[in-house]
Length: 247
Image (cartoon, rainbow, N blue to C red):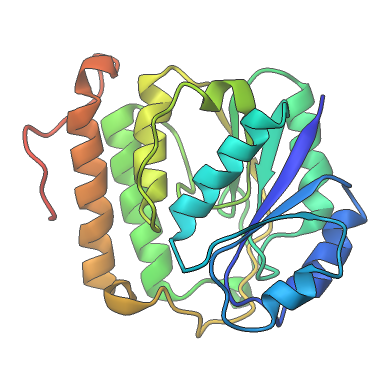
């Protein structure tokens, strides 16, 4: 089973060296997608034996994941594990994803920060936790899933299953499109617990998405539009709105 670790990165000079040291200590095949970093991240990446996709300008988190999906498919990997570069995902848990993939009973193995109760001092900012819970509940209700964390970026994907999807959402609403298409194409989904780590409570999304209400409305609009677009492929129990809407 050949597995690639993919790490989307944007202005992570503070963390990238420590993250790559730890990831390479666990697994040798690593791809970094540098999404137009303007700090020292590109220079630091050159010190490590990793593959790099470099965006000339910032194109978005979803675009970085789609690039990783394409790379894994073209280069013949069986599994792809994605994780963030801000030390909020623990490289020591990579073997847990590898073991879950080796069990061969899922196509998507999604990390969940909420399957196990975390200490109160590890809690995310309240608006992020509230939006995650609200959107996750809506995804579950509309798609018949039982997710506990729809936004966690620490995931393992069966590469052959990803070939069925036609993903296009470039930004932070990428999971909304992904979950709808995963259900529409019959992908088997499981969750495993991952640590809840928030090192920097001041990190932002950038632009209008820093506003919690705008962010929530954007996520729901992408979700509803993708439900409508895929409605003929969704199972009968899926709940699809008749129109796209923001709220």
